[in-house]
Length: 270
Ligand SMILES: [Fe+2]
Ligand SMILES: [Fe+2]
Image 1: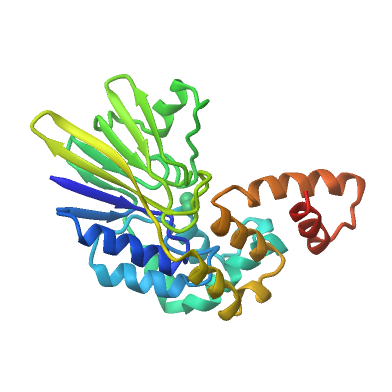
Image 2 (image 1 turned 180 degrees about the vertical axis):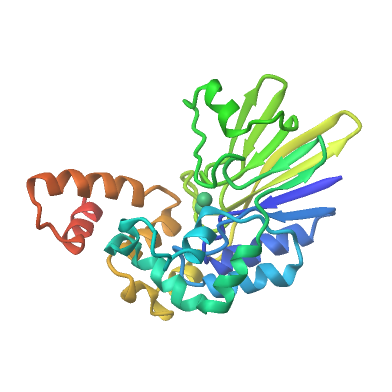
């Protein structure tokens, strides 16, 4: 049995199409779309519609939750800030009906006693797993005796994490890789007579086409300046948003009136 897990498409249609074409050329028994189909890229609606069209099982990610819950009165205050304007773009692009449908996404996909596929962890859709995450934390992230193979996503960096007899595999990202290579990534798991083996796959795609979509769609200008950072992440395959937010916050302790526009400009010149 061969299982492909694809995730973190983030509104990058060219990357999504390239990965689907790569998968089609292989003999895959099951494809699971493991969340974060939408948001931060220009083409969330097209990616979501294509995801539904495939008929593959879909597990929800934190970005589906953000867009679904974006106008809840009890939402975190920061969701109304300039940093979250890209999410407002996605909210407007999807419209109320598509956003409503996001309520029906599965929290996980499981092949009984063998394989658990979940966006971040069983505990929370925003849990990160790093090389330095202590083992005791894994028990909290994956309680209730999970199967020996866990495939998760969310960090956008392909990883293998042994955990006793278990293996936790983190997939790379299709549309917003952060592992230093901008090409699309997904993960292939194969069950043979000797057990499961897992490999990360890299798929080159037309990055320029996606970069053009940032401008052509109007997203780059509409959600500026933060959209520029997401575009740079797609172009380079490296972290921009997380270090920017940390630096901007540090800069503002000395310069409380520092605008996002100036801060992004300064960040990109570093
Ligand atoms: Fe993601
Ligand atoms: Fe995520």
